[in-house]
Image 1 (spheres, one colour):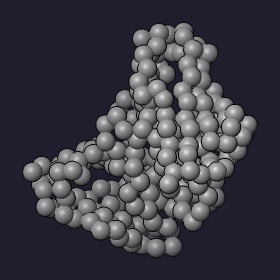
Image 2: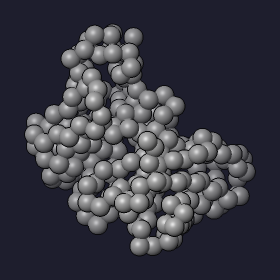
Image 3: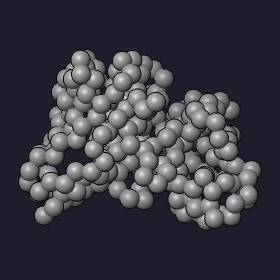
Image 4: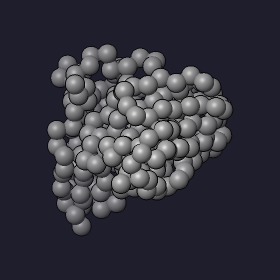
Length: 113
Length: 112
C-alpha cells in the first residue's frame, strides 16, 4: 500500500530564516506530487505540483519554491520566510488511474515569528 | 475568483439525523468532484467522489448528489455520528490535469 510522509510535523521559525519541508511517498512510482497550504480560516490553496523529476509548476507567485530531486521526493523551500508564510502545509500525491483522488500527508504546521 | 464555493462555514446537527453539506462551482469544465474530511492538525482524507456523467454516488452512509445544470453538489450523511464532526472540503478537477480546486470547507458538528 502507498504511504506519504512529511516532516517536520511542526516548525517555528523566525522571519528571514530559510525553510525546507520534505515529503516522500512510498509504494508507488512516478506519482504526481502537490504542495498545498491551508492558512488560518482558509481553504486549501495549491502552491506547486510536479508530474515528474525536475518538473515543477507554480500555481501562485510567492516567497516559496519547490523541487523534486527524486521520483518520490518533493521539497518545499524558502530562502527568507515572511510572517505570511505561516500555515499548515500539506503534501499530496496522485497515482494515475481512473479517478482524480489525491491522497494527503499528515501536514506540517509552520509558524513564522 | 473562487471557482468552488462552500457558502456555509459551519453546520450543526443532532446525532442520528441527516447532515447535508453543499457546494457550488462556476467552472463548467469541471468534470470530477470529490469530498474530503479533515480533522484538526491532520491531512484531509478522501471520502467520496462523483464523475460528471453521474448524478448520484453512494458509499455506506455517504451519498453525493450532482446537479450539473445548477452547478451544485451536495454530500448527505445519514445517520450522522459524533465521529463525523470535522471540516468537509469540496473539490473539483477538469479533464486530465489532475489539479484539484478546493472550497473553503464547512465545519460539521454532530451533537450527541
